[in-house]
Image (cartoon, rainbow, N blue to C red; front, top):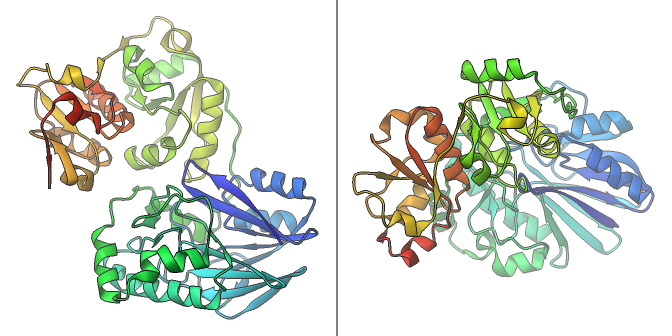
Length: 450
C-alpha cells in the first residue's frame, strides 16, 4: 500500500490517493481534480473508488466529478441525503480495492454522519480520519448549529476512542483537516505525520479521562470560523459541477473604471505594501502572496453573492481563480497588470501610510488604534485603549469605528491590510500597522492581558 498526499495549504486540508500499485482509492478530493489526476498518472494506477469522509463544510468536493470521470464507485454515507448516484456505505461495511481492504467506521462528531476508513494491506493499516481524529486534536463540532454542538462534542469524544480501539497502534493516521483548516479545534500540533499510537499518548481527546471536562474545554476553546462555510454543505449535497479555471480575458479599461465608480468589488492581489503606496481608488487589498491566507479571508469578509474583479499579475490571478473555485466562488472577472498605471492609465489612485510599532508610539493621542483580530485573540492580549472590531465583522460594523484617523493592526499585518483598504474605501483616514503583534510590547506599547 502506498499513500500519496495531495495537500491544499491554502485551506489547511489534505486529500489522499491510496493504491496497491495497480488500482487506487481517492479520499476527500478537492474540487480542482487535475492535481489528483497528475498524482494518479505519476503513480501509473487506475482509480476504482472515490470516498468522502463527510459532507464538507470548508471546501467544495471534487469527489463526484472524479468518480464520474473514471467510472469509479463513489463511496458516501448511506445516511446522507444526496440526489446523485453513489455507492451507499455504512458502519462496518468492507470494500475490496485490489489488494486493499477498506473498512468503514462511523465516527460522528464533526458531522452527524461522519465516517472514517481503516485501509489494510496485509498487516499494515492506514486510518483516514477526515475531521474526526486529528494530529493533537479533533475536528470542530459547532458547524451544524448551537443546538447540535454539545451532542456532537460528546459523539466526537466517543468516536475517536472507538476509532483508536479498532485500529492498531502502529496504524498511520491520515486526517483531512488539522493543517491550518478552521475545521480543526483545540491544540492541533502542526505535525506532518503521526500514528494512532502517538495520538493515544498525546491527543487530549484520547488522554482526558473525563468526558464532560473534554466537552466543556473543547467548546470553550472554539473560535470564529469563516462565513462561507454556510454555503459549502449545500453545494456538496447538491453535487458540485467542475470548476472553470481559465483566466478570462482582461477587462477593457473603461469597464474596469465603471466597476470602480459603481462600487463593485475590485480586489487587488499585489503585495500589501505596494497596494498601500499606490492603488486604484475604490479597490480592496487582498494580498495573494503564497495563498495561505487569501482564500479564507476573502470568502469570510466579502459578500458571498456579488461579482468579483481580480486585478494583478497573471500568475496571481490564475492562482486566485483556482483557490476561489475550491470554496464555490466561480467565474470572477479579471484585469491583468502590474499596477494602477498599467491597469488603468490616468485613473484616480489612493495611498495610505504603512508603519511599524515604533511609529505607533508617536501617534496623536486622539487617533484610534483599531485591532481587527478575532475577539478571542483580543481578549487574550491587547494594546491598552485599542478598539476591537474583528475583520470579518468590519463591513457591517463600519459605523462603529470611532471618528478621526484610525491606525489598524492585527496579528501579522495581513488582516490589517485588508481592513485598512476597506476603511479607506469607505472614506476613512487610515494608517496600516504592518507588524507582528508580539512586537508591540517590545516597542514600548502598553499591552494588557486577561
